[in-house]
Image (cartoon, rainbow, N blue to C red; front, side):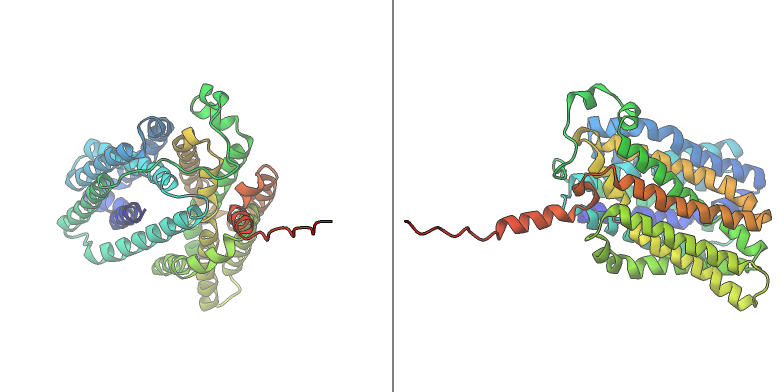
Length: 424
């Protein structure tokens, strides 16, 4: 588990080096124009959507380890190719290769974490992964920002080279791991003939709780992550008069809250029902959107607007810290033993769709329709609460609160013996 977590953090560190600067690199450094840069970003996202539907079945048949190694090698080649590319076709194909590789890495890592954890440790394992990935992304972006120089194309080649090496390191670490067999949550779905008869997405779509979780996941990622660098950024600069440099401060505040609060929140979350924690996140994010609306009223001082805008990102970070130990482990606990990879890949596909549609919808609204934009995402956040409550009704007690399994074992081990009646 330590090796898997280290590799995951290092790959996130590599991504942090390049993803924030991909648009600038293509449009300005390589002088290929804004249109080409948009196509490159679209290719990065679309490649993930193409690769993910096939990923889960391969993981379940071959195991997550070989899939992770191959995906890491593809991502490494894609990253280095972007740094060397100087034409439209080459840079688009390289971005597609990088996008497909990084997309496949996520469900493979998630499945490896499931295989290496049990009911008592899975929640903390996914929380640790989220913490380390955010830390890696933040540090990568921070260090990368000190290296990049638009007047020196070689500085970008260095960034993409470092990213390529990080993916090779991930593959190397993965090759040293000996994978155990997965440990199921007590009360989880058994591997039955019906589940085996159905294949791929049909099995997932036939699982009501998983479908509800996928819908909930789409709304979660659409209303939060899909707005960070698009709609919310556009709203902040256009409606609230936020300086572009403040956007970096807001993202730093988001990361700081995650890093500081993750394990404090974890102790609170893991003793409570997952559905209630997700419902609480919806309420927290609704408050965050209301504060963002306050920042854009135009009746406040610029300092107040800036503080409110940064607070919005900080509240999003608090919600993210609560989600990391709930949503990803719940996907694993819902999956039959032989379909963990397919469930993880299906959820990753839902996430990718939300991240693709979120900017497309939120960007124009945040820039031009300020009031409707805030109202829309307040309602989306409240929708998270409603969907989470409904999902809770479809979960077994152990799926909704795995800590019950630990408590029941402790009670069984310490159950006092019954008094022996005296002989008549």
